Image 1 (cartoon, one colour):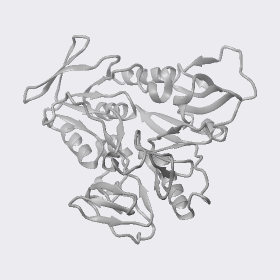
Image 2: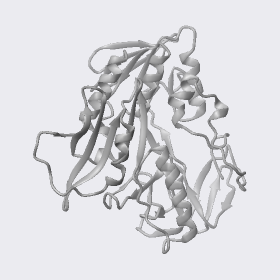
Image 3: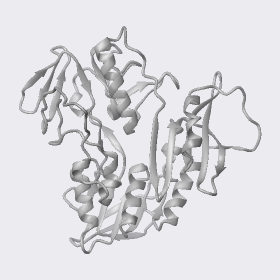
Image 4: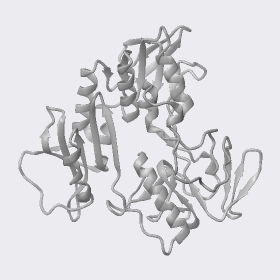
Length: 381
């Protein structure tokens, strides 16, 4: 087990919520197992290259580590802005436990009252929730509109924006920072609409980028993560399957036959766990005997007391239909579908505080509807 961080594997989703708010301590984050893993751990060790021909990975310092089978699960790194002050300790990302610890210290600093969060995805929204719970003045700056549009679509994303505003978050949509000034005791940010924001620190919640830089020159296809076939076996630049290399988690891009043949990356914890299990099975069985990985992606988030749960891939939906509750009440269930050559296909369902109602939609993901409704219950997503 080779890892760049000095820690054993730990759960990352709580970093932006429970750990940041103090509800979870650092010692509660590591993954636990009923039995000790019979493995040799190489922690605080950076990988610098992969030699497929020699079946070996190159480590920092030039050492080679040979393998019979390799699982690539390097995840993603936090995206950064090249124009942000590089050396300012007032600009933070949240990817590692060290990142989250630094943000927690900043939040609890005696004079810290104002925080600006860049990014309107789940990380940015959850950071805004935690900062408001700690009594901070929060401004959420998002280049696109509305919040979570890329994940949940415009219609449902607008509901999340309303939740944030009602909780006291200053939501700035369709804008970006054009100038950064570090005054020593705080930051001054100028937006492209001419407005100016003064804050104690900034957190970048801009999403992730696959950790594949060390695989350049390896021969693997890494244009957006590690490309895999349906069994999770890695694919090289010539389209050939590599029988002794698999990938799993946020770094892996693969076609889920439940939807179509387009390779995609899914960045959710439950998915990473399930894909890790399947990739290990596929590595042991080999490409000829391995099964295709056809999960129903699942994820959840909590926004100011509202639990948001999803099954499928809402971003694939072109049509949305409220199946239960009302979007005006913040308690509802929306079904997402899209047109295919075989008819409308159900691609996702999202529930706001309706966990039981969501359960019956899980097995419908990927199915084709017998007909398209013509009434007014459907809207564009």
